[in-house]
Length: 141
Ligand code: FES
Image (cartoon, rainbow, N blue to C red):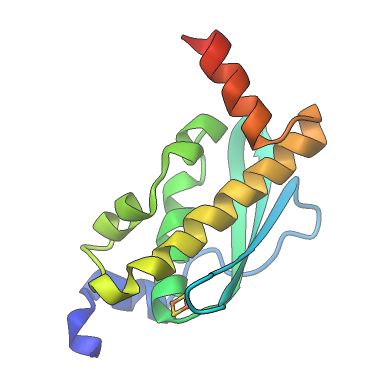
């Protein structure tokens, strides 16, 4: 089955970026994958609305590790708004694709990142992601 993974997936699986934890994180998100039960935890540091640092830990499979590695690379240095637009499909595309049976693994990274942002927003503004995005949709355009 290893042959069905792209070189980029194998690279991020063998040498994942941004693994670890941030002790003084501004937001922490943890989610479980309903499909396989694997767990992902994401830590973010935010300054002036920019994600300045991000780390993850996972009890997940190789595809979960590779997609988290790529997802954290993609949103580091981005604004909260840009990070929220990142989809699991965009992450999979950046890795030159994932086998279809492994697409559910990439959802873990996206959900954990959203959960970390939600946690950050609740702590910093008192309003979680849901209230915050509604607010932006009402007033932002
Ligand atoms: Fe669980 Fe991939 S099989 S995250």
